[in-house]
Length: 409
Image (tube, rainbow, N blue to C red; front, top):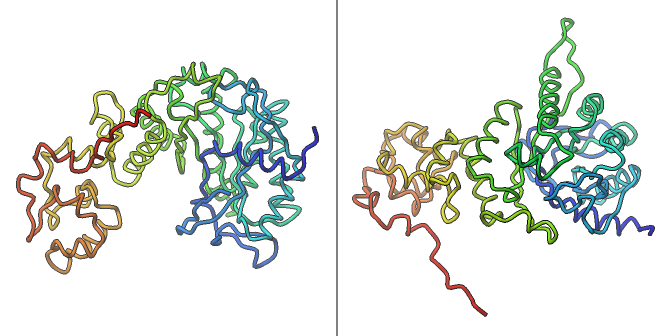
């Protein structure tokens, strides 16, 4: 059946919602003041953020949701009965330009199912971004989902046009990837990620003549892991994420809650509610990246290696390590202040600046923006002491949501 462009857009925009890797932080700032069309960093359907924190909107679509792979967790796998559609490269280019001209978007997030072969699919995606850049002078942000099984030459070309590339590792354990995604090879995935890192490193080095190579994926690379599709613990996710950040210079690891598919859910029992796990994993990932926490510190709070779903992982760590509290706000190191629940990185920077002018007091922390309802059991000030509150038996209950009576009808 021949579909209209609008019908294709409805199907393929909806199908793209399972791709979580949608962020534009880290790219270079380009605009069309000197010719071309679009902008990689303006203010402005998928929301992402520029290096300076501004929100931009991206057209987030699949080129097609036809797929020759049969990944058990994927709604678009070959054995799924979903409604199918496919854009031509020209249609994706036209949509991107028209959406931009109407001020709906400032960039493109493009992924795809695998059609014919990985190389054929990757070649079509590259054709799209090449046309946007070369034929239409599009200067907006482009995030391209890379197919790891595609040839090295195609991945190398993709990085010349895209701001960010992403290669999905899918699951934190290789055995699960092999079992649930039989056409995918974990080693091939990591090889593709290593290739992107090497090309990015090379693009930042000048030759002996001082000439810099062509830029390559200036926004870096990211990856995605599916939460709840197998029995992996949160420790497994965080351990894998830590290794990926270090080994492949990733900008972000994205966690995507598994959405049960009727004919696959029996084979994929949900270990914990995946949406809340996704949220807690993002919080824990943030602690590793910006607060100095190690995986073992976060994951060892629970013997199961899973995060507490009722309270955030920083608070859970503080409750499990009460011997390190209360912290003297006026003498503690930055590293220790970052471990106080209710203190963010900006709050800690303001505290350190305020300490140079004299003792910081309770009212000062409120003015600075600290979340005192959460922080006060864990800190000491000239005009505040938590007393026995820090070690009280019911401290966790102060923060955990009250239990709810289930509705039986």
